[in-house]
Image (cartoon, rainbow, N blue to C red; front, side, top):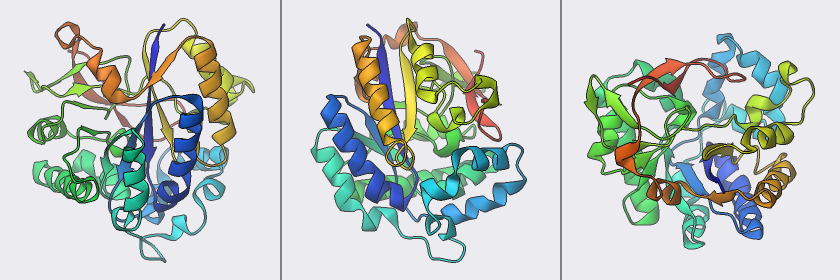
Length: 298
């Protein structure tokens, strides 16, 4: 029986307020566990419009109906409308997730600021953004965070060491083939990386090379007889228009004998001493615009 660890990225105010409660109920109905990673500061989603010139961005917008999933109001936050502070306005929703027994962690403070800025930023900038997220997490949950999953799978060379300084035991910042210990400038950093190993739903929707195959069916084919996996979903999509598809995915995975769990349980099952030591590099993923942090060679 293989394990599929479910990681839920919560990017926006709307996703927190509406998508998260739907996903909690869906997971409870299925008896599945998952890790919810929260954006904890202002929602500035509208500022992502500057990515319009990035290769592949417009194609993704057309394929995934961004306006319908995120809502017009969300796409104006930080541009024509002030961005609501997610941690302050949605603390009750977040606490409820933890009280119901789900793992919670840090996604980011300001999602757009991190995703568009961290790759070119220095240590002080990344440290400040992680500190803001950590402080807000502590204010909401009254305890230290245990894990971090970088917004947009974007990091720089300082992030693993900063995660270690925060006392994190594991993180899910990258795309890759399996768990690894990150190596930065020849040094091992003792924060286990649990990369996303499967394509996300929004990377599969409308892909011409899939010849009309349904995204759920494609994911099922990728996990048939496969090793352990990490699957990332988004509160704005699977907690919205794709909720029925996600619930079908849960049922099918369970019927095929997969164990659906959270990052903490998955991390605890690993023998860290036997894991590969790998660099974090810039790379691309089919269906997603731009470059991401990917698992490289040792």
